[in-house]
Length: 154
Image (cartoon, rainbow, N blue to C red; front, side, top):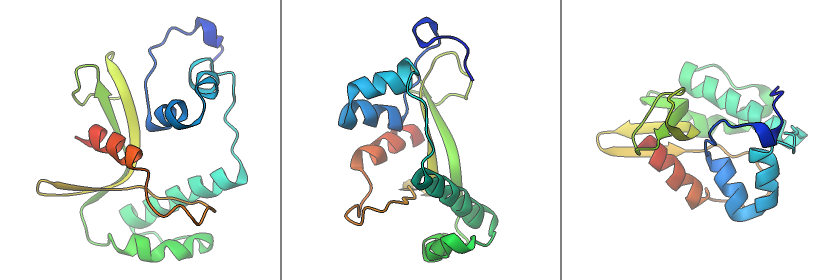
């Protein structure tokens, strides 16, 4: 845990999709508290835990052909679609202040994100983001998220 109070922390702010979405779509005050001041703690709700474990399960299923745990058997058709394809799962992408890719600890790192699944064939790339939500009305990925990940992937 960081022992430096948020108002004294002088590390550069690195953006992520989650942070940008919080400021853009939710509440700038909550974004300030969560990502800048760090006064709002991360709380893993049962729903978040289910989603996090689901991401781990799909990562192992797609990248290492490990069987899905029973609670995630419903995901098998989605995972099987990538069998035998050259995919990268749970890959981190970083971007520097000059707009170029950089490594994780680059001093000019400006943004980062972890892309759930990437499939590149020739000059075409496919980005997949696993979703574990109880809201049945959510049918499609947030276009803003796909644009952020496409920027990072590029």
